[in-house]
Length: 538
Image (cartoon, rainbow, N blue to C red):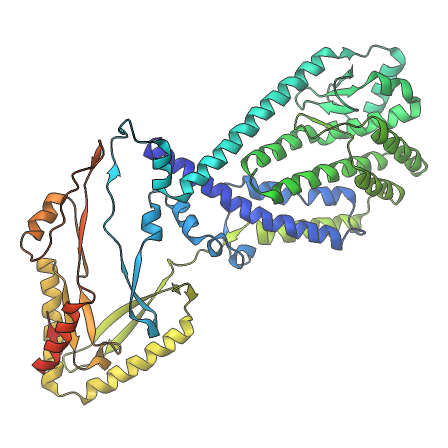
């Protein structure tokens, strides 16, 4: 897989994971709301509550809002490392997981990050014959493995969907069009009563279980011959009315959308639960749609017909290409209760349903407010006769896995700032001038040479309570040759280009970091104290 294609796939997978996480929270909210308002919400509004879930799962972009629920519940808080790699696929697992954290002052949460020398990358795409595919996957980290598993699941579901759809179409073609005048008259009368203006075929087939609507571009109502023979005219009209309700509401198209969502988010059990509940609520919404167009005296007869058909003729209608009667015994009980208690739709209940949907959308269909990069910078100013100088200190959002209290940190920095100002006033003018001149000299040296300098501070109150400050910590080189030119002027070991690079790999970058501890620092402190100077540079 080419790097650009890989980054595209990982970015898309990141969007899927983010959307699935958000939708999972929304699913739980909807189930809670349905439970709380089970006797106050009409069936059609219980079904419409699932619309925000589909939108959330298919939404490629959403505005940011401080009202977003995901300001509190975010994916970053659960999987920060993986989320970072998905947001920026160019970051490898070693770069996100193998950073060495060294503390200069743990009390104040000031962290120096040391990134290890990065391994060479593949620039040509070619690999030796003995370079196994699994080695490549494990070398890249956990995200590519997850992407591979996800893609495998997607492809399997797509293949199964195509197979099931071909079987459904074959079964539909094997059926026979109903030409009986009495049945056709009843079919067209019911169609007119339900307000269906589209052309709908009427087919009899034993290979498609139960009464159902197949297709959304050219819908077909399918009923088995045995069902046609067992129902009298009134019962058959109720069944046809239910199927025409599916056509009128375009439920087959909705089922395809839900199935597409399920393919992309197959790994999320809450999405499976949502689709299953939505299909149940879809059936009850169709019942309500039919009952709303019938006389109240017909409710009981309609309910008894539906239950009779479900007990003897209902089949598996989870295929996305059809919509029809289906329910478990528990669902049949819910439907029967709803049918018995059904009243004509009321304006008050519609307002309640619309209010709940708008409230859900306002907190779940918007993204969390974008935060900063996780670091905050506080400026500490130190007064001196030579003028003001400002030290910008950056501290992390998290330190050693714990949240940094910014208010407490600011208070600590304010204390150090005050101590620095007081200490500066008490210093001799000669020392103040020497300190400022030395720091300015080191700044210029860093710019000119690119070397690393460490300053020992006799008056550590002027340096945020620390007796050392680092300048020019890291130097990066564009090529290995440039690094060798610099390394040749230094004492000690010189990093060599690996001799066993795989074919197509190049050693492109090298990095030299300043000493952060050990003998160098111990010697510096000793020499600085011995010198008696306000600051000592090495």
